[in-house]
Image (cartoon, rainbow, N blue to C red; front, top):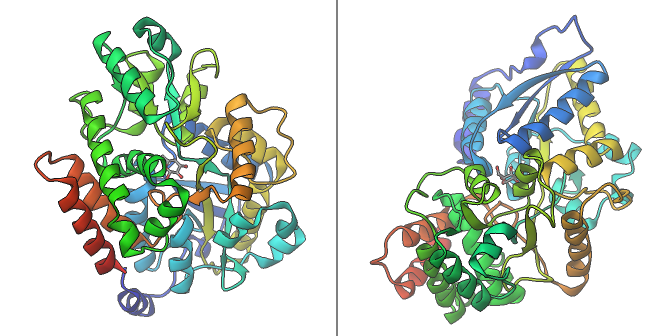
Length: 421
Ligand code: GAL
């Protein structure tokens, strides 16, 4: 998205939003763009709609299917450039800065101060929500990305043990394959390839080198022997994935684990939302464990909504109520129970949450102290959308072409990141 193109497009069209419409039947309305369309995700989004409506405001759902949100972001750009953005959109990480920099977003500072966001939210979260010191987005949750989801019944039938290290993972995968099950459920889409690659990188590189490569974009870290090793290990995973994986949605892959067709999935804890929606119990029907070799480490992905400037006062009031509702303890509880993530409030009562969420919260806090809390680049928290896209391409092309070597790919990675900077 080029700044100039966007600005000229904007000045050419009047900024017409849904705000121009009268909503006699309620106090104001928000149109909300998001990509939460899987079973667990849709249940979670519905919580927000209901809570807003209970307060007399309208919710116009603008869901764009597609895990990871790439399609949603494309649609959002089109709508914004034509001068018709929604009131709120699920925008994360660096994208928040990019949209704010273009002048699209409204400030939430008054709500933030009346609701005490500075006090109730961790700094690692508020940093992402602010542009030039002002709140322009509201956080919904914290997702941990480096998780392994496992079906214990399949493990038992295969005589395998849920792995904690990379070597154990390979040993378990071999046994599961020999027993006639799919070891790793995966959907061949660029963002899912990137999600798995990220977990392998964390295991192989450790947090320090991970940050150097994916956050600071140090060419030595990007071109390091550890990066070559990461690509090699990543390719090793292919033999444990079934041939129907290309194009498969992530929640379909989760379902393969739920149904016992596959033993494991490496995916963020939105996968837990699918297990929950299917009525499954953690520790009984499924296991959540850190992705192999990443115990104590935490790749964070924070979902958030950014708010666009509106002209209609009623709709702006609806926006503010939405922001306030998102951070209310009640919403944080119900939403995150459905979504698989952990609440973003530091003072949240965690007693209704399961062991996976408690583990996630404990690791979030301990990793924050030890320096093992790192932003997920594959979900937009570590770098710009341009650099993220460049890395996606390199990772996914490598995964889909066995003729390309890890060495050549790492060279390509260094050049691609440089070009996108
Ligand atoms: C992530 C998002 C999650 C989840 C996932 C799959 O990027 O942060 O909330 O929805 O995509 O769609």
